[in-house]
Length: 418
Ligand SMILES: [Cu+2]
Image 1 (tube, rainbow, N blue to C red):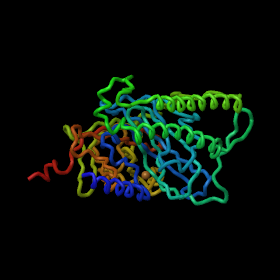
Image 2: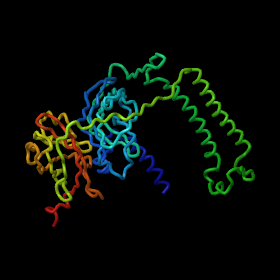
Image 3: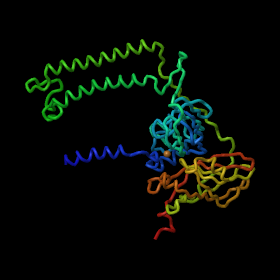
């Protein structure tokens, strides 16, 4: 057994170290309900997709915290809209949410739509997948569609200059870096000496069965567990630790006389209400109005749409989790998000729904993204999906409606049953 462990642990470590790059962010490991019923991302753009170190990349888009937010999760309250990239390969330098600069977390509400813009600067050369995401306290980070960005080496190494309150400019990339490194190492060495002292030459740990019998403050001089010599050395280590703390405080006060606590600005971005009311949507079918064909990765949703306006309306776009499907031109598809996460939305019957009319329509969309990102619940206690359906009328006015559907996967559909 021991021999096996001795061989397998280094082998496992070697294996872990040999992994070169990851091609996904683990979002497919999330349960479908966690992606579908919580937040929908749409119209996400990452540009440009080729830069040099130090140059900016802008991520824009919209997300809605859906009204269908599951009751099994903590209610969405504190959130942080963030770029999701593999490690600190970019530096976030600017973020605007619903028109307001947002330095940190924000307060969000169910049903709220948040338009974001984030500017990142390339820090490390490489080929990186860049997503927008929203980290929600109590739930985790929900991620939007991603785009590949190539960062090539620049003429100069990465610099991140910021101006301090006293007017001095510092490069955050290196500011205080070597001090933090050496000072942490010094503290680490003190701790390491303490740990080795008690574990290697002493039997404190290896004879736990004996030491566990002793009282908490028993030095057990009769078996020589803790000797006066040990006390002397431990006093010395404790003294060094306290001295380091005092030196650190004094040095900080002398070197940086002007200090300000780290600033936070947590606010609730103003949420815009829908400007127009064009359509009322009800799931059609009793009670299942959506089905998914696993063989062709096709999702179809039956809906009754009532046009409440005085102009014909067309269903233009269905967005679910990080995927969007567009009933429109190539250009409109490109506007809906990164290519890998956009598909075609087929509406049956095609054509607009006349003013004041109610019509039953079927939305049909096929994409490998359903399977790759595991967006469809196949064996869940609640077979629910939710997404945003955008309508447009003849005057170009738009309304986005949240649609919740009950889904039946292929193997339970009547035509597949024996
Ligand atoms: Cu990715």
